[in-house]
Image (tube, rainbow, N blue to C red; front, top):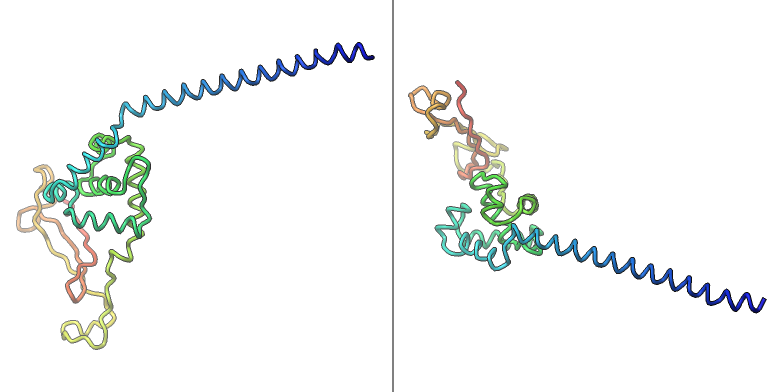
Length: 225
């Protein structure tokens, strides 16, 4: 029994060492494979994304360079943009991401809303992927909705002590609704659709306002031939 146990001991030890060596080799192969995949992923990202400094230069030229450029591209000046940016960060829970800061997220969203531009055009203009633009737009819209109590002024019903005689008969009402035709410019093949009784194209616009002339609702209705 002593000879068998003495001869079986080294043999079992060799089997254990072989198993350990195989496991270590397998782990080494996995590490190498993950490194190759990570390097390929980095190369793909560099093909359509610029560096951080390049993106900041785009935002600087678009927003912070001049009020004229900011108003043309985002429909607001630099000071209102900065104020809205700070409100989104403080109250809208909009945060900087790894590569996209809050001001760039807001600029992308305002550019889409102000010019009705498609995802592909925005991704080319800001040098971002289409997936990034889509995520940024949804995230910023949700943050803007959270500011509705701060940005939207709710109308106050007309009270019993109204001084204006024209409004004193409408106690409890929120305001008045009226419509008017506003001249517009359309393509030649659409003029017949929007032509009013006076012969030029117009759009029927319905507007609701409070007694203090605060507009609370606007609806544009095109004429149908």
